[in-house]
Image (cartoon, rainbow, N blue to C red; front, side, top):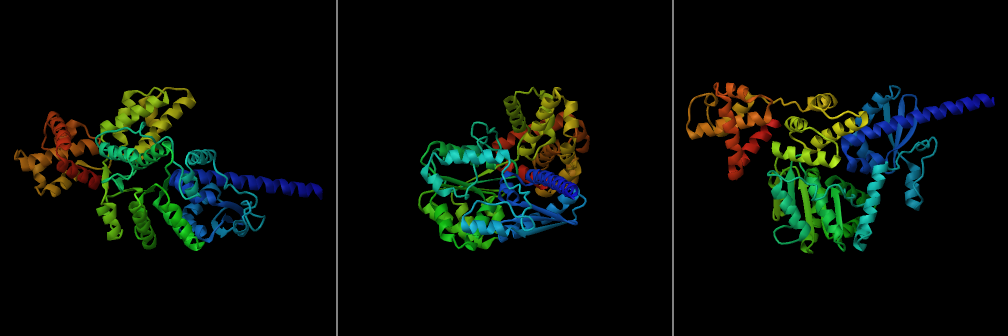
Length: 493
């Protein structure tokens, strides 16, 4: 009898360990998909429950969290579980009653009980790097009494890797960089409050915001709160549910600098916009600095209230353009040098040509190459690059065709499509044709002779001249640069 019980216990322990290992792998995948901030905010607060037949139970400490995770991540959790463990066909999200009671009584957060909680398989403890990040936050907070007052889980820790010193500056981002440096040196100065940074994904907006915050905090006696717009919304709703709105308002409005990342997530959230608007006004009226980022300029953020758009545009608005080939090369050279691993120039050029829209992914590709070289003990080569990054490079294959570019440019400048390959040299035709050649070089993998053939069998030197000429004119003529960037975005989207 005892032997049978022992075997059953061993089997149960083995099953629990397998479930926990599966859950850890799922969390790692989700963390890679949603990023550190969202992971800590939502996924990390999930605890693992038992597997009953084909249904796995996951627990969250609050109803609001449960509902949010179910709406945002429910389907993804189910598909990941099915991939990880075919025995799991359904995911049930429930509220951890014991965690709720502990929160009310002030007890330490417990592991959920067998059958009514997390089956002693909670993995809500932070991963090592997250714990280190919070340790850094504690250290930064300790430099200022006011920072300690406003932490209370309201703000996200600043990443010490994101400094001004390691931000690579080029034509597409030099204005935004200069504005960020001005605010870091002289917060709330006239004309720079608020500071609104906008641009596409992975171009450096978050890096600059962290750099500003780190520089301000290093001076001491200044409180900085940084959070995503999504977290602002979550904290606001949670304060309403717990009837602690006044505490939430007082904490936010007591900071010297408030930074809100990805403001576009407030579109359609009217109550949260209302609260942000009043917080914005209170801080600016008190001479405090507001820094905001989004994927579009204030005037283009349709869905935001007009009064909020107006307020956001009344300070300094700085955009970060898509990276140029030269800037991507500079970024890769700086990262490769910092790693200490030799990376041939031809590999850097290859990456800069292949991954063009997202600096974050560009750096990630280089990190994978360096890690592979260190682990297998072989140098980085062009051949190993193509092999190690084949999945990433496939996703970044340029699908824009020269025909599409010619058609879009002709429409934009109101000329005939046949003018792209005609011999006409009138400026009204020649300049758009040069722009189309420039975009063909930037957005396709075609060689100069191949591009020339698509433009009326022109020589490759004609294409090279067009590319160089448009590059020069973009530096001299902001209107032309704006038109070219608009066409690029339209084609890439």
